[in-house]
Image 1: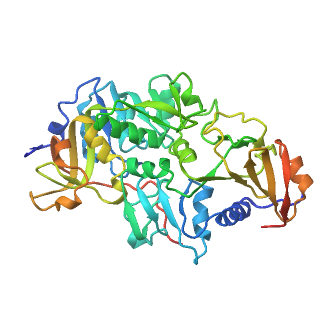
Image 2: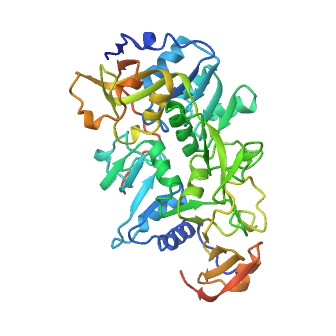
Image 3: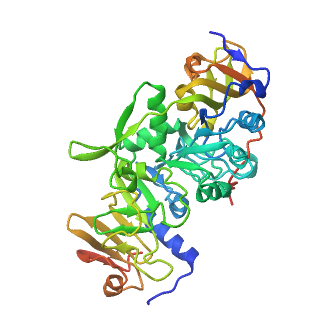
Length: 224
Length: 230
């Protein structure tokens, strides 16, 4: 095992790498949890509009105490502000934006991803089902789906599998996976390792990934 | 057309009987008709089917109806904020139908717009599609979903007038406009009842045709996750 990192550092590392997926001019939907953190690292020279599926196009920063409006929240139910140029809409319209492929990129969390880009991130059988929220709509709507997650679960087992064990959120929907160890693309020919993080070797990534990995000819090493 | 202005919340909900299907606006605790829900709790009406994105929290919003065992069936997209919900589902006391959030919003929109069913990609290849009709258009699979209607719709708006026109505030709009249109009887709880003509016709979110009754109510507006700038 190359590096043992503190959980907060791992999350920040993944969020910072995920930020590089966002291009200037993009409309972006960020999932609840770690994906929401990506907003903190968006470079100032990029023009980006963040969408919240409850009905806000243009999420701003968190409010100061005297700016809090209880009627203004993001999809994670956190108080937010609206950015300059923002608009509000109904939840039907916000999902029309998503389903109609007007959102350039969605960055979501994941429990399992397989070789074909199937994603499981909404329920664990035997545990209480909380609901899928908007995830099933978003994975079929945004033009590009990037999943950010730990490379292995708390038992040290790969979350990138030949076959998902958990009930799916969407089939063949994932374009790219970013973990604290690597960046992996879903291609027609299976999974392709495109970046390996500092402190890890290609062999270590292969050993900690259940699914087969091809290595991209121009693999970037110690990339983030 | 002038709409009924209800003199009290109790009277606003008194037509809602046992076994009614009701839709309730809001996302989390934002945009919920707080006082109409409280009046339903007091009314003790039971065996309700409730259609709403969430089911409140343990001690507020729809969570109060749940605690009182007034709900038989819940149709929503995310119910994870509520421990009593979990207990009732596991005990077999509460039936639940989970539907993706965008699908739920569109099912309600369709119900209010006279569309019986539509195809959507959400849920294809997942447990939701088992036993359901899947159809291929242009090489992509889609799942058939049915529109939803309700006997009564309860919504919350920032402003409303006697013609039933409604204006919402910020993200308190959420599911309210579609729910207003999908109820056979729609009751709007407004923070401010304004004089006819005061609302700019160009700025109305819900045209009055969808609303049968209104009542003014002050809102607590509880915050679920206060997040401040560091």
